[in-house]
Every structure is written in structure tokens, then in C-alpha cells.
Length: 622
Image (cartoon, rainbow, N blue to C red):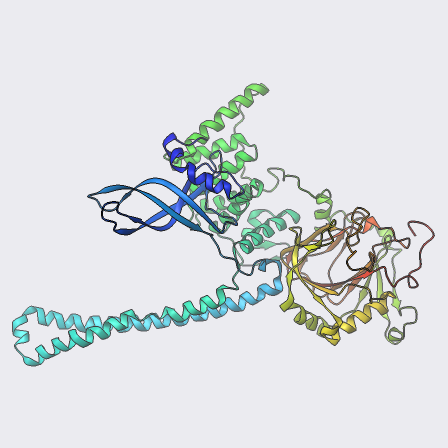
């Protein structure tokens, strides 16, 4: 809705500056927050001025705090009338520098549960530091109270008859002593700051704290889990997840913040779900800092964006009833009513009152996204849509595998079992011992960095939103365990690892996933592995280094397979046919981790060196 004329004039310059900074949304208003100085135009005297900023989404959306990758922006607010005191008012021109809302820290912590565990111990240390600070403050306060009690009793006596009190020379001396010495000691006591040690400790740890990106990433991860495993907001809010129930609860304010995260990303579908849950808990009597009017403000506008005008009107009416002077609600309500009336006239329909049922998962359709097999992929993650029939399963078998007479496997052959017939996927049991797994995790943890994907056009590794994990690359020279694991993979598969990529260790974070992808390079990306000079990825050897309580399966949407993580086991498949052509059926994904911490390690084996180990086939699909 348009702003009042006088207000739009005031905020236009600031809005122009923010638009020039390429923020991801448009503005209907702008207010600033910060401190600066102004000078009296007559005397030159300077004094502090508090300035506040907020930005609004277009068409009456709730106001949002300014965010983005702005390092600094110079904003001219124009002529403002600033009250220096109640006797005088002057007009000043104020120029000030708006610094970034947040500083850059070690971001993307949320992408690895392994690294997030360090934060648990950090928080424990900070709690202990906080308790020591409280104890010091209590000791200081007790000492000050003791002083106050003693001096209170003394002043009652002295003020009852000042001259009579001072007539005694000892009293006169002690008064001089108190005011000259003892009150200074009290002043020093009061000025002592027990918080310094706590603040110092905080400053040391703050550089490793999660930042805004981590909080947003974790919130989006919960929404991803909500979608994939079809969990309603109340289930999350009450700690009810498949197979478990915990006391990890979300408050009204937590749900509201979740909704705001979605709203700021123009994800009105999830904004509606979480604002609705926040409102539901507030109506149930739960205490909160956020007001009902704020929740309704976001909820009504998000419902409007989802195209549900009758419910948007009803919610906005509730907002107006609670806060009649709300700056946008009245205008939005009139706009929604006019729009609905116009639509009903065009469609020759009568008004239908909105449903009284609360908005839940399934009330609105989730918007389509970039992934064509989204529904099939998520169904497999839930254990639905599996294509392994009993008749087909009966043809699978298990056996001992000695690597075609490999000396290292003759005395202790590997246990091999079929997971899928075509394409052939096998699982090996007892591939890694607990001690080997812990050593690999120990080596990888300090090296973990946001997992990357190879750009199909340039071959350069880059991060992607569809891969939420952290990974590290380990060389054989790093530790004998790594060298031993590489050799074991070679013995089991019969393929050389001399041209394989390094052992990649990955740890998935909150809602960690890797959406459907191919491990091999396709014909439209011939240079994906050109820099390596070892040809395409002929096969994948995937070690599971942890059990996962819920979620985290490896699924193949093309043929409906789902392979569950089992600690110490590994799965193996060929990405290429013997002809060298890619097997497009091997498109696979790592489902979001619902509960638990998922550790895996990959060995991607390349074509070069396999010429006499895996001979070419006679046809394209051999």
C-alpha cells in the first residue's frame, strides 16, 4: 500500500540508498537505528542523537531489520527536527555511516554436527564463567549492603543532633576520616567490575560463535526436514520426531523467528506454517516477548501472498481489532476486500467465509522448486515408494569375497551382500573398525570445510545450497590408517586407487543432505575432471562411519532404492558401463539427517589405470 505523502517524502532518500546496495527486497518505508552526533547551529555544541532504522516490504508487509552484505552505506536523512531541550528546537542536517549489521565470523557451522559439538563445551565453559561472575557480583553487593547498613545507622545518630554529635572530638575526627578515606574506598568497591573476566572470556569465544548465516541455515534445515519427512510445525515445536520424543521444545518466540526467517526469504509457505504455530501457542496461554499483533501482521500478509484472500481478510480484521491504529492493517484490509470483491465479480461467485480450521501442513501446496524428482526423492527418504519387491529380493544373495584370490583377503574374506540387482549395488560388512573410524574422524575434524561440488562447465569446486555438509580430504601420508583403508578398498574392488581421488570424509549438519546428483561427469560437461587427468569417475566406494537414528539414507530415485547407513559398512557401485558410457540410473542423493550425526567417507575411483582390471564391454550398456 502507498505511504502517506509526508512520510514517503521523508524516507525516499534513504530507500534509494538501500536499493542501490542491491538488497533482496523492496521498501515501503525506512527508519534508522544507531547513534550519531549533531551540532547546535548557533553555539556549535555537539550532543548525541539516537537514530532508528527499519525497512518494510512492499505492499504493507511487516517491517524487517536491515540485513544483507552491506559493509557500509552512507545515508543522508535530510532535514530532521531534533529536540535538544524543551525550550528550543532547531533544524539540522545529519550525515552518518551505517555499519554492517553483523561481522564476518567462521560461518557455516550448522553444516557439520561434528564441529557443532565444540559449541556445547564452549557454552558449558561460558555458563561456568557466568556463575563465577554472579558470585563475584553477589559478594560485591553484600559488601556494599554492609557499608550501607553501617552508614545508615551512623547517619541517623549524627543527623538527629549534628552539633551535639560533632561536639565529641572523636566523632569529628571519624567524620573527616570517613569522607576523606572510607567513602573513597566505597567508591572503589562500587567501581570494581567483576564482569571484566566474563566479558574477556566471551570475547575470546565470540570469534567461534555461529553467525546470522548459521542461524538462518539451521532454521531452513528444520523446514527442509519438515517437508521431507512431512512433519507439521507442532510436532517440531513439541519435540515429537519419528521414533523419539524429547524435551527440545520451541517457544512462541522460536516459532515466530522461524516464520520470520522464511518471510525474509520470500518463502511465504513456511512463514505461514510457523507463524500459525506461534499464534496457536500464544493463544494457548504460553508467555512470549512477541506480541499477538506482530504475529498476525506477518501471518495475514503471508497468507495473502499464498493467494488465500478470505483468510487474509479474517486475520487482518483480527489484527485491526487488537490494534486499531496499526499503520498498515487498515489499508491492507481495504485493499484485500476490494481485490476479493473484484475477483468474485469476475468469476461470478459468492463470498465464502474462510475455513475455521487452523493452517496446517497440506493446507496450501508447497511451491515447486528446481528439483524435478523432488516428490520421488523425499518419498524414498521416508521409506515410501521402494521398488524392491519380494520376488526381486529373493534373487539377491550374500557371500564371502576374497578379491579374486587377493592374498590379503584369503584368510579373512570380506562379507558381501547385494543391495540391488540392476544396477548392481553391493554392501560390504565390517569394512572399518571402530578404532579406524575414530582415527579418521580425528584426522578430518580440524580440516572440515563446507562441502563443495564441481562446476560442470569450469570443473572448479564451489559451494551449493543443495549440499549441506562439511568435508575434509585425507592423504595416505596423513596417517597409516588412511593408507590402510585405501589399500583395503583396492583389494575389495579389484580396482587401482593410484588414480583415485583422496579419501573424502564428510559430516552432515542440521538437516544435512546432498540432493540428487551424479558422481560422474556427463557429456555436456566433458571438462569436469580434466584438471585431474585421470578420466571420469568409474565407481564410488562409500563408507558409513556412523549409525543414524532417523533419516540420512542414500537413495536412488531413478529405480526406487534406499540404502540405510550402518556403521562400519560400505556400499559400492559402478557409475560407468564397461563401455565408458555413464549409467544415468545411478543418480542418487543423501537424505536429510532427521536425528543423529552422519559421518561418511568416499573414495571416487577413476578410469585411468583400470584398463586391465575392468575390461571394456562389447555394447554400450555392458
